[in-house]
Image 1 (cartoon, helix red, strand yellow):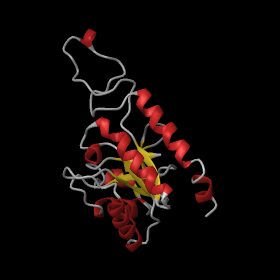
Image 2 (cartoon, rainbow, N blue to C red; image 1 turned 135 degrees about the vertical axis):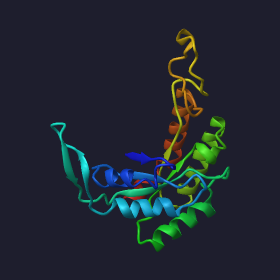
Image 3 (tube, rainbow, N blue to C red; image 1 turned 90 degrees about the horizontal axis):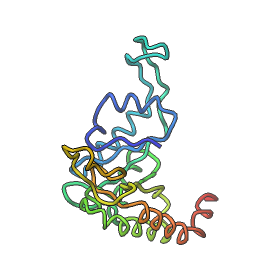
Length: 199
């Protein structure tokens, strides 16, 4: 799976590239929380494009794509407000239906959904799991900011002080927390997910 960030969802170049990928592509809602930019990106990437690019021999060439029909929205919150709750998810479903798109929604457990506090990511994921257990079929995945070590770090002037496995961008949950999140979800969804595949 590929994901396009909130600040590049509106980028024509990213939409064009996404139209030629052979993987599902998630487009994050805007940093303001606006869903329209992500929905427009999904629609745009589903269409064929022709644009200048580089071929397998490293030469400039015209790249032609057939469109990517596997776009989905990634809810990451916006303007300091989360949007993974049942009301926000329902609004996303309605917006996608209005755009004649399948309601495939991934929740980003980080960013505004956790107020950039990695300790809240397990709570966000637990809420999503509960929505699925409650019958929601549009929630198809989650994203977690995860690394070997928890939290984040600035790149030190003395690289000997650099902690390998600790993020230099967004603060993360550590490997042990990530494993627990996944295992807890697997237990709770063990009997639910097989029934969704048959629907």
